[in-house]
Structure formats: C-alpha cells, structure tokens
Length: 105
Length: 145
Image 1 (cartoon, each protein chain N blue to C red):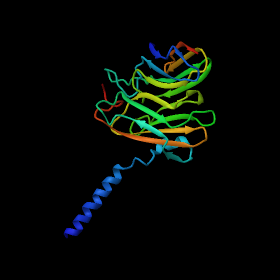
Image 2 (tube, rainbow over the protein chains, first blue to last red):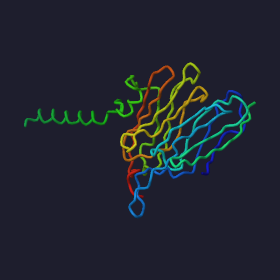
Image 3 (cartoon, each protein chain N blue to C red):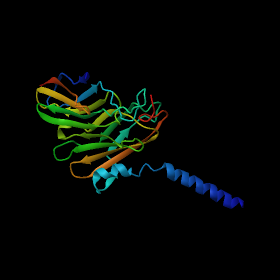
Image 4 (cartoon, chains in turn red, green):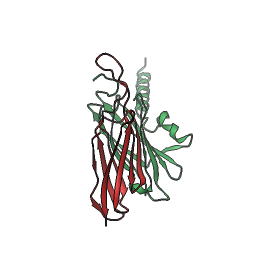
C-alpha cells in the first residue's frame, strides 16, 4: 500500500504541527457487486495509528463510511526530535507502515 | 371554509414544515449510544461540511472541538455518525493531550442527503455534539458504479 504522509521536517519545541496522511486503498464497502453479480467483500483500513517516539498520539477506527484513498489530517505537539511511526491494517490483514523523522529545536 | 380558518390552517402547516426541518438540535439516536446514557449537549464541537455535494463518494469534512488540550482538560475521542449510511458509525478518532489541537479533517462517503453528527468525549466525562446538514445529489455506497 502506497501512502503519502506529510509532516514538517523541523519544528520548535511545543509547536503544534499538522500531520497529513493519505493512503492508497479502495476502501471496499461490502455493498457493491462485481460484473457477475457477486457481492464484493468489505475491505477497508480499519485502524490507523500514529506513534511519536513509541507513544501513541493518534488512532482512528475507520469504516466503509470513509472515502476511498483515506485522507486524515490531525495535529500533534512537537515534543522531542525523533520519529513518527504510522501504522495501518485492512480487513484482509494487509499492513502498512511508514516512518518519518522530525527535528525539534 | 371561512377565510380565517383557511389562514389558520396554512399557518399550522407552515409551522409543522418548519418543525420538520429545524431538527438540528435533536441528537441522532444512534449517535447518543456512545455516551451510554450520559447527556450529550450541543456545543464545543463544530462540524464543517459543504452545503451540497455532487457526489457522495468523497465529501470533505472538518471537525473542530473547542478545548485547551491540556492533561487536565482534553478531548479523548471524536465519533462521527451518519443518519443514512448502512454503517452509521463512520469513524472514531482517539486523541489526547499530545494532540495539541482538537481538529480532524477527512473525507467521508455519504449515502444521500442527511445530517452528519460528530460527538466528542471530553476528559472530564462530558459529551458534546454538533450536526451539519448536507445535500448529496448522487449518493455513495449503495449505487452500482
């Protein structure tokens, strides 16, 4: 799964930084039929989490009510230099993760 | 029918019509479940949606909660509900004091014109909500596209 995650590369200590996550995923609702009339199984990213130096700062439970290629914007306080680790998993058990580093001055 | 009765009737119909549409202050019963019986008050939360969406497949939504986001007073979670989607609970977002700002942007799927409700659970145990109406000309989820 391809994802585009945008965080500022550097920030001042205590600054509230914007984090944008966009993951390429069909977010199949489970209500659509294929060409021969069979129901397509639901397959959505159900959990998306963000850890900041090992501490979870954000988590989202998503469902079929979220658009394909889910996009989420949220904020976090820049506390220390280190890594933000993003992790997500879909109904079929496919996992994805990405790490990005942030420099805090 | 006398003219006076007729006018009274018209006025009554208009009042009913207004009542049917001015239900923004009534919380979606499905959304009330999250509070487990605790009162869910209107306020603090602001849901921003476009007034009209041509297509329900991807509708931008913004939820902002008025909170200082400190360890003592912060938003624990934000729950998003749709009135008409087959799955009412669209998403749950879990925040904490580390978020700094209680604001979430995302894109939702909507099955038709409806009211979208966001309920915020605060660290002091109170629940707040806001609802925004939207007109969706082509709905998502159920149509075969």
